[in-house]
Length: 485
Image (cartoon, rainbow, N blue to C red; front, top):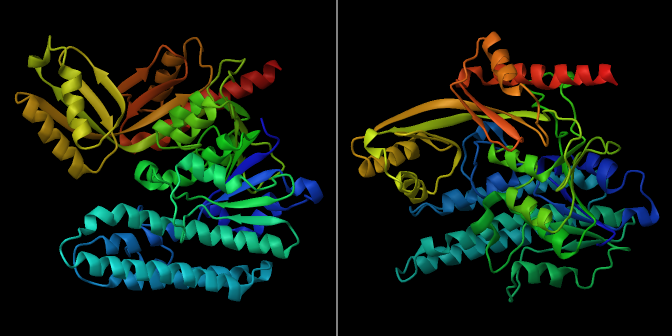
């Protein structure tokens, strides 16, 4: 195993670059301590939204709330050129970011030239593609994923290039590692790309600043969509045989969301395992992308999640073999906006294919479920998807089970999760706590493996359920443990 770490910095953190310099990249480091690290950066916060589509309605200029991203506009079938205006907006915003970074040592002329070259290159390419597809022999739909890949790469290249130049200006032997494939004529597989990029880098004496996007034969966005930067991060860690992977976030991995449970009542998790990380991912609360975690786990590389603004705090260490010596709940997490799709049909009794038949409909709409209940004549799935898609799913299931009664209802899931939850009486204690708080648990999911329990509650009760379970399973148990010590 190598002696270096691979460290990823997220987009929101990158947008506070003065703090990134002070807390992650430089800080008190001098000489050799600056090296033996590989830094993988995301695009600055909001840039990828502007380049692709505003996935969550988040925009950079509030007065233009709801504006579409470049890809979203380009992929529309009409003949408008509004996507060109969107490229200009992204360009202007990148120039403003550059101007803000000039006091930190960025050569503004050089940085702006880089942005202009990339974005005007993209504009020319898209114009040519539109013209080509106007002849009818070429279909735009066949090229859209490639367009999406190309647009994604611009944001990461921008932030990595800026970081490299600022560090160089401060006398650090940094190197810009551009995995975006810009103007390259040869395409490599994912592994080949990383090996080729790092073949001549002296990690002990150079600080590689790497784009979070990787252009490769497999098509990283086609496979992982917008989770690609963590995939790049994990692939680099594996290929270079890193000692540890570190993800710098804007917060600690804590026992609950401090926006729901008061911050002074939450506890930073010191150690946990990849199993717990998987449970969080299933709820959409990723410590790391599940496929990235899988790759690191299989190669025995530990992961550390750190608060980017508390550099001296060790953060949370995630390993394969950790198990808490003291049985306890580590995290209360959950998910709102969950839809029950319940199929009740007495004709299903005795049909061994009933599960697989229903799952065929899930596959048809590329849907996954996060929990499931079954009995003799009822199968219930808990799904996160738009209502329009849920209604199509329901109609499709009814085509296989024409006499079925299919219920659709909005709920929330609240989970107690831990690496060792062999706690006597945890289930009745949890239910009693929820009942005392006036919260009804409509369903409970508990596996024999003691890693988690899920409670299905009304959406309106989500926050209160999180507070109640955290108070009873984490806060009070923590007080007992401290007293015993």
